[in-house]
Length: 225
Image 1: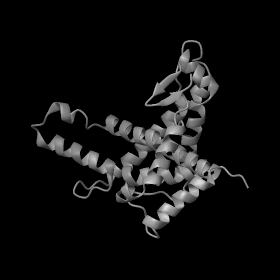
Image 2: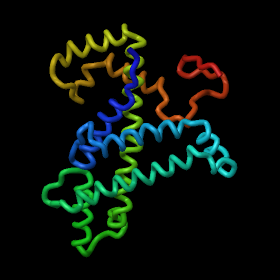
Image 3: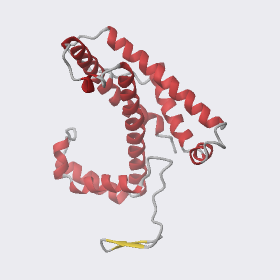
């Protein structure tokens, strides 16, 4: 039967980012985590909505749209949730044993503050607002774009089973039963090409249209207007 893969894939990707940023993973039924993932999915839907698109082109005329207001409310809710998680890590911080990106940032901030004689340009980056925005950016730019790419990949593999079979055959030959490693990439030329083609074909950002304004020939390939 048909099913929506958005929540499952988003949750998996978000949890990987959580492990890097916070040094811990959430249980998938954790209420706080479910709210975080649902909000990310909703924000993507809002960004792609017609009313938000109209606001982006004509902000003076469409500042009142409901979707834009919901997007702003979600953004502030995200920041509050992330700030609370950062505060919890700060309260239990051991600069000698960093658990995550947040810990490393805070430890560096403490080190710069304690040194006394520091470069102001460097130290100016290590403050709470910049930490908050860094974490927000990692989730905003990393979780949704990655999960959309994976979901499109699943869809395209289902649509082109002959390609899926070739990818699986190559993985079976090279990787066998272990986990895939970055070093396997050079030994998986077909799989690597398929991943690049998925990224070429799809559009992970709802407000970017990719097309040519006139007929063009590029490296012997003809691209129609």
